[in-house]
Length: 222
Image (cartoon, rainbow, N blue to C red):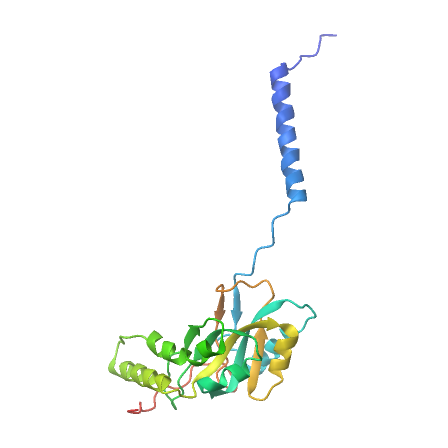
């Protein structure tokens, strides 16, 4: 029988090195699994067109759980609050954003989200920041008047706070949800990342479905 061909030692060594590299990579992945990525596609608040009853049930279900981690959560109010009422309606939890919308019958006004640092005073004085965040230019005369009126009312301390974004444990959020004047509290999973989720509150005048309100009413002078 003819002798079997033999591979050069260099080629054998190269093959062994390649196998060893593959084994090393596999072991590295087993011993050091990649960390679970945070949640980047979350949203707090109802979807456009969603039935209010469905959202309320969904928000209630989001508070189920026994973990003790802190969660980002949206607090939606039954009626708009004046700035001084913000801390008592936060459940003592860290307030991250204050959400404002100036209520004017049959007039659509902009929603403004104001990030706030830690501390009750920052939340109480955030209405002034909300006024500054309103757009300075508008495409038409009606929108210009609406924006100017909204800014003036915010600076006067109107009852225009429609929601808060807070951070706290599930048991604290459940306690907050049971209080008078709190219409809904919706929590995100504990791994949600700050600044990586959308926020749209359930507005007090949204009773049946989450749809834009009418915008055919007169704009008051003040």
